[in-house]
Length: 260
Image (cartoon, rainbow, N blue to C red; front, side):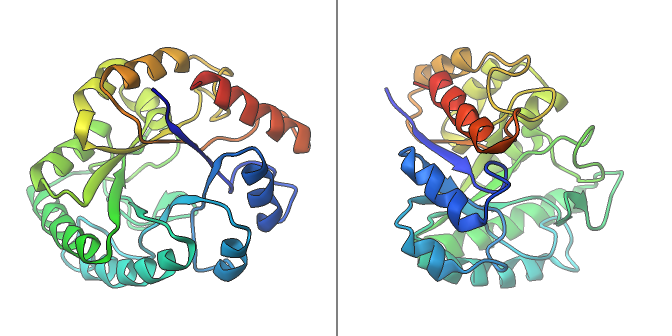
């Protein structure tokens, strides 16, 4: 049982322009992922002929906040239009807006209103996705190292949201790097998330580098994914542990080896 393997072009071949990064990934017969789309030449990216599997699905706003959740919807509509250029069918969300990786409006306490607003906003996003033929995914994050102040960020919380909404166009971006830092027990987490998974993202811990550089046994994760019948996308959202083009090439080799 095989997976579609994709690589985040924001984090490898970082000495090269973005178009060259995409071409290098494509040459390795791997799909490509991007973060932001508003600051990129989408037509030029599309002209590379690469397969793009996911990108950011909003620009501003918080799923959890009734005062600005409409901004998530508004910018999600813009993201859908941008996604058409690249053929992207999976648009990624966070429960709260990030600016340079940090919560734009940090919260230290989760409320019932946050849960209710997030669920209602995701229902609306699911309907948008269904009309456009795209799936919105909600990514779990860790609040210990990378993203303090983001509520409902843990994998168990994002899973509860996805299952509570129950919309076929709203799934989970299960990021195992973040889950390892915040929760651990990854194989059982994979089994628990099951059909709620829209995509798996990977990096090792500590360091957020390619599989094989830290404590996570990604070959064992691969077996667990096969065990639940998962055949979707696994995206490497990781830095190369060694510098330069050669280091990124080696990181892609290690990624492929872990999931082949």
